[in-house]
Structure formats: C-alpha cells, structure tokens
Length: 269
Image 1 (cartoon, rainbow, N blue to C red):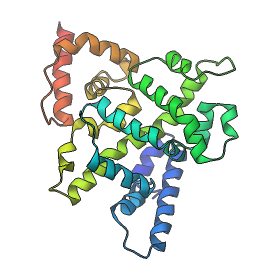
Image 2: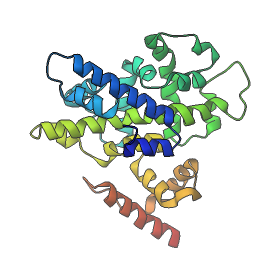
Image 3: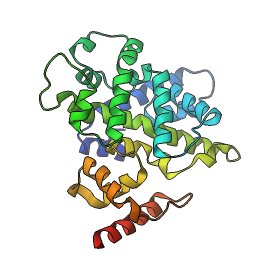
C-alpha cells in the first residue's frame, strides 16, 4: 500500500500522517474480514479499499437509498452530509486524527479521551467552520467562530483548522459519491444512478478548496494561483452574469469549458 500511487500523492502533499491512518484502517479492516465467518459484503470491501470503517459506508448507502437530498446543488449535498455528521458526531472524532482535532479545539479538549464525547464537543464548531470556509469567509472570520480564552496569534486556530482538520473532513465528504458509484454498479436498476451529478462528484474537492458551487471550483482552476479563495468568491459575483446557464447532466469537463468560455468573455469586456 505504501508503494501505491495514492500513497505517493499523499506523501507529495506532506500528508504522511493521513497516509498512515488510512493504511491502519485498511489493515484493521483486513483483520476484521479474516475473522468473519460470513462472506464480506460490499461495505467491508470498500472499507478495505478506502480506509474508512465499513459501518460508515453502510450508513451512507442506507441514507442514499432512503433519503437523498431534495436538491442536487453542492450546498444541498454539503448540508445532507453535514446533517449526517451532526447526527453521528462520533464520526468527527473517528475520522479526524486526534492531534488535528486537539489543535483546533484547544487545550481543554485534549483531556477528553472518549470518542463519543469528543465528537459531541467538536461537531458544532467544526461544521460552523466548514460552512464559513465554503462561503468564502476569511481566516479572521473563521477564527471568530472558535472563541478562546487566549488571544490568538495570526488566526492560529483557523489556520490549524484549514491545515489539519479540513483535509481529513474533506475526505469524508467525498465518500457519498464513492458509495453511490459502487451501489449504482451493483444495482443498475435502482434510483441510485439518478443521483449522479458533477456536484456530488466534486463535493470533496469543493469542501477541500472552499467553494460552495462547482462553478467556483472551476474558476479557481482557471485562475490558478493568481487569485485566492476569497477573491474567487468575490470575482464570481462579478462575472456570474456572463456565464451561460448550467446544462442538465453536464460532466466536469463540460462545466469547466462552460466556465472557461464565460471567463474569456468577462476578461475581454
């Protein structure tokens, strides 16, 4: 596993801790599978492949089948996944490295060892910071959401959230589409296939990069390093009028090219 391409990408992004955590999850899942008397189901196999507990995949599968979001926008899928985390706060603790969550939540949080309690104490602050990040708020605004008894230096807790907690939670937001793809392949006649969209496909990326629409994510890719996340949000408001309407069922490539055409028109004007 350490020689895989996924491992190479994580090492390149200086995320060795996340790599080790995923390998540990995979090995734990493998040991569990070896102990099972019955044949492993689809969730067990996904757990072995993606390094998250099999129960997480089962829960997402049940929710996708029974109660997908009424809308299909990026914010609809974000709210749907955030609601799940709010109802199952232990997942915030289990799916985030201890030192990452401790660094964001503060000294008093470090003494708590119970995953259930840690999740309950952290979930509101974590989800509030995530929403602010997606909405294009600055680090200063995100810092205000996490009151502390000490005077923070250089928005310390907001930076810890972005650098440590955010990448791990963004991975959680990518899981619904992984489950959808697997279930659609195994149940081609079910309604699961109808949930496919570029918004769900790119949900994890939007959460990681801090954009509440896939169009803004595309704009960020087009602008590159010349524009910050906050600037992309503001620039989109200026150029939204120049964009052609979304096409039903468009792919990421089609959406990217649509935004690219709008950017060219905007820049020329």
